[in-house]
Length: 166
Image (cartoon, rainbow, N blue to C red; front, side, top):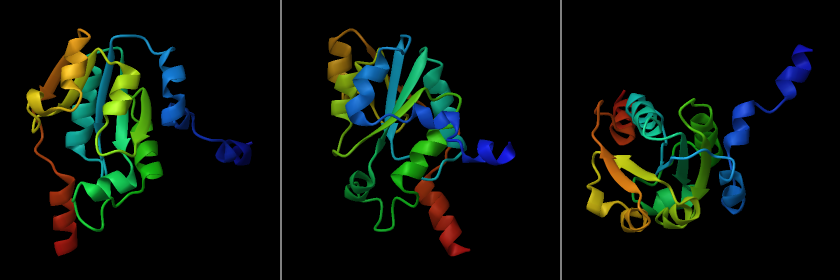
């Protein structure tokens, strides 16, 4: 019995949704719906705190991840992302605060925002509301946009720099 359990796909993997299936899966999501996006390369305390705070703003949290090629275009470094998209999605899907995980190949998540039509659009405190992609659209349909202040000053780039120096 232990062997068959080990061969099963973990339940959290069902929270990973390809972009083309997203609109169908959204029908089962209770509103208010919260949306955020990012790289989430090496998950740290700042990330999980931010995601829990985001989820607290609604009934469900959708997280859209930058694809690997999208991360490379962000200029975070030639060796980024450290973790490939499939691994980053699995780690996020395993979090209780995250309802669904999807991804985007483009430079911005606007297409996923338009598909989800969230009630609340959220980014971290380093993003002023007027610079958050999709803010105009979300406010246009009556939603809200929030920039959540950092509770824990953490950075994957800084963390990787410290690791490389050791």
